[in-house]
Amino acid sequence: MGQRSAPSRYNFARGTPPLSLDQDIYLQRQEKLRALAALGVELYPRRFAFSHTLAAIHAAFDAQSGEALEATRVPVRVAGRLMAMRGHGKAGFAHLAQEGTRLQLYVRQDAVGEAGFAIWKLLDLGDFIGVEGYLFRTRTGELSVHVERLDLLAKDLLPLPEKWHGLQDVETRYRQRYLDLVMNPEVREIFVRRSRIVQVLREAFTARGYMEVETPMMQPLAGGAMARPFVTHHHALDLSLYLRIAPELYLKRLVVGGLDRVFEINRNFRNEGISTQHNPEFTMLEFYEAYSDYRVLMDWSEVLMAQVAEQVTGSSTVSFAGQHLEFGKMRRYSMREAIRAFWPAAAGGAPSDLELADAAGVNAAVARYNAVAAPETRFAPVRATKDAPAGVLIAALFEAVAEAELIQPTIIYDFPLAVSPLAKSKPDEPDWVERFEIYAGGMELANGYSELNDPVEQRRRFEMQLQQREQGDAEAHGMDEDYIRALQYGLPPTAGEGIGIDRLTMLLADARSIRDVILFPLLRPETGKSDAAQADEAVAGNV
RNA sequence: GGGGCGGUAGCUCAACGGUAGAGCAUUGCCCUUUUAAGGCAAGGGUUCUGGGUUCGAAUCCCAGCCGCCUCACCA
Image 1 (cartoon, rainbow, N blue to C red):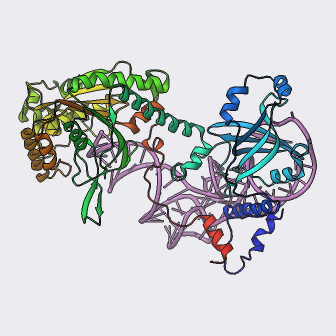
Image 2 (spheres, chains in turn blue, orange):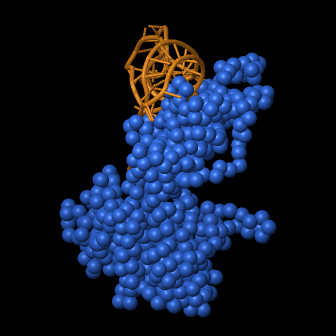
Image 3 (cartoon, rainbow, N blue to C red):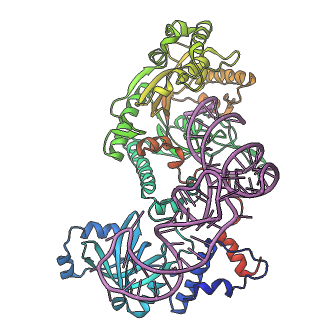
C-alpha cells in the first residue's frame, strides 16, 4: 500500500520539523484515500439507503436462533462507524457502531470479492461504512452481518482514542466532545437522558395548559435576577445590550398580555465564576401561571419533580453522589425553621422568629454563629457586609447554616424581602415574602414565588435595590421603568418559578460536575495548530 | 482571587536523581467464526514551556502556561 513512503513522497526535506505520529497516521490515511480512489471508490458519497438501524436489527432479531436466520437469510443494509476490526487473513470481523448500539460484521474475501476485500483492507478504525449482506450467528452465537458488499461512507483521518479505556483526559473530553461521545457510552447516555428530561418537562407543562414562548436573550436592562451580565453591542442601533441573566420580567409582561400560563426553556448568561455547579451560560426552565401563588407552585413542583424522576430514571428515588435522593416526598422548612433545625449546638440558642425580626437580633445571632463557625468546616462564617439589611444577613445565615445539609430534596419557603425584589410580601409579615427554593444534593435547584404585582410597591423595591447598589452591591437589581409600566396595566395574581435544567440533569444522571451535562462547556480557547493542520501545510508546501 | 493535585508516545498509564518503557492504536508479514482475536517483526518522544541546582533532571528548585478539585461569589 506504500504508506511508509508517504512522508518522502511529499518531500518534507526543507526545514520541515519531524512529523509526530498524529501527522504520520493522518498522512497514512490520506494515502489510503488515494488508494481507494484508485480502486474506483467514491470517497465522500452522498447517501446510503439503509434497511435497518442497528437498534432495529437488535430489536427484531436478537431473539432469533442461528438456524432460523440461516433459513430466512434476512437481507440487510446497515451503516455506522467502525469501532473494532479483527483481521483473519482473507477474512475479518468488525464492529459497527450507530446511535449507541453495535453490530458485528463478518467480511470474507469469497463473499465480497477481491475488489471488496481490497476496500476492506484500506479501512481504518473510525471510518464510516455501509454494508449489505444477510444476518447470521457466528460460532459463538453473536448476531452478525455476513457482508456481501461494502461501501466507504466517510474516512476517519485521525486516530480514535484507546478502545479499552476510552477517552479519559478531562480537557480533551470537553474540548472534543464528539470524541467523548464516540468513545464513552455513559457520556452519550447522560445527554440522551438530558434530552428526555426536557421532553418530559415539556409534556408536563403542556398537559397543565401552558404554552411555550421565547423571550429576548439580548436585553437593554439585565433584570429578573441578581448577577453580573455579559455586555454586547448592536451596531445599527448603536445600542448596548445585555445577554439576559433571566427571562422573568419578559415572561411576566406576557402574563400582563393575557398569556396566562407560559414557560420558556432557554439559556441564561451570568458573567460570574465557573465551578462544578456553574457555567456562564446555563439552561433555565422558567414558568408563570396567573391566578396562582407560591403555595400552589410548591405543591406542583413537588409532584413535577417526582414525575420527572420517575419517567426519566424509572423511580422517584435516584442515586446521586452515593446518596439516595427521595423525590417522592420533599421536606419543607421555612427559612427560619431551617436555620434553627441545622443550628450548630456550640453556638448556643438558635434564633427565634422574634430575634430574626429586627437588625439587632439578627446581628446578635450572626455574632453567636460566627463565634463557632470556621472555614473548611461545614459551618462557614457569615461574611457580614457593613450596613447590610437584616434580611440579607438572614439569607446569608441560612446559606451558611443549612444549605450544605440539604441533600434530600427540600423546599425552603418564606424569604426575606431584602433579597427578593420581585416577590410579593407575606400579608402578615411585611419584611418577608412568599418565596421558596428547592434544594437537592446540596444544590439550589429551583426558585419560585408569588409575583409582586403592585407597581407602586415594585417601584419602591427597585429603589431599595438601587440603594444597595450605591452601597457597593454590584448585583443589586436595577430600575426597569418599562416593566413598571407593564405592571401599571395590571398583572393578575401570578406565581412563577425557575428550575435549573443543568442541575436537574446532574441529579437525575448522577453527574457531579455541570460540565458533564453541558455538551460544550465554556473553556479557555486552545492555542496553536493541530498536527493535522501542520501536516496539510507541509503537504501544500506552506512550511 | 486563595489553597491542593496534575501535565511522559495518537490513547491509557509506568519509570521518582543514573540508557524514557508497557498495553492499545499504527506499519509489514502470517492467519476464512473472532470479539480487549492471535503470532512474528518494525516505526513512533522538545517527558507542557522557560530558567536553575547537579558530573548527570521526566524526576529536585523557581517562574509561567493549561487542566481538575476545593474555598470565596453565584443558580
